[in-house]
Length: 426
Image (cartoon, rainbow, N blue to C red):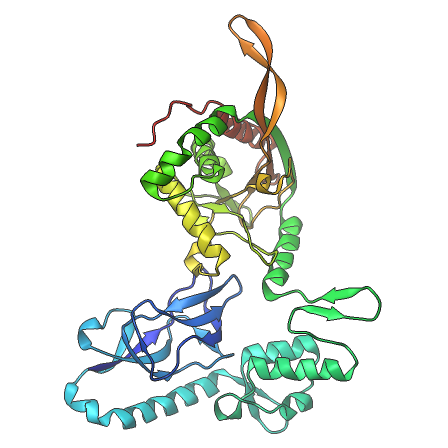
């Protein structure tokens, strides 16, 4: 048997710490490798973390409401030595030392407490320790040092947890005759309501404002004939489901067209760093996904040009499904180079999407509608019913001029319009 320290895994580019929202398992409970045992929050995503090993949880090194640093140990698992991998530090690998387990656990707990105390800050006259999360909530809500000191803590060593300070804020609001239900809606007299932004909505708001401040947004529009795409999808969707177990939507077909156009116009796949333009070597397509709570998240299809249409469909479905059940990982949101948004799923005709920084362009696909159209044939023009869609392309005019932005979106439209109706699945 061995004691191993489970290390906080990498959560994506530029993420160095996260907040422990909840432990999903208890000390003494047996877990299988990859069982979800921990829920954390970063400045980009709330997600769950799987166990690094199979075994019994012996110790939590980071408590609920506290900060976990990427690369640092977060819990101790007792496991068979054969299952020890690279994402851990062996605490005890000698079987004959098993009898010393209680003392080892005690020493680990003491060391963990000392380490945690060193990282935390203290305020108030009693020199009490508070996690950065609690301090941040206190600052935002105007809780004074004296008020914070008076809160009864339910955490380790009577520390104030996130739930403790939120309960205090609720009681404080109740005393001011304001009803604070569990939901984020705050009721006032009359018909008006004030709805508290959740953490994700605050981040979205900040990033959208930042993008409009940074980038000189311009939007170009083009209409494309989606008849071949729509008819082909209708023709193959039954076979596709039977052969792959997946539903084929329009999104992977749209992403495929975008990838082809990026290869034709690689200067649309760039980022800006001061007065330098960084031409990205990879084509990583972000895809906007609407969540049930009204928020938006943008998981990334990395190396999108390496997938077949079937592979792209599976990847798109996987990311969308995991996004909607809060199962995305930090890496799923990192390193996007271009973003697409299928606003047609909401019945929208067109839009002016906001660029995801530090990218320089984003494309939105509107609803596909049947329209009376002029059809050109070798024998002259005729009138017919075609399925049309408007594509909206917003780009950063600092580095993308109208010529490039317009040609790019037109090329995407061309690839869709010339889609092969006789295309084979396999």
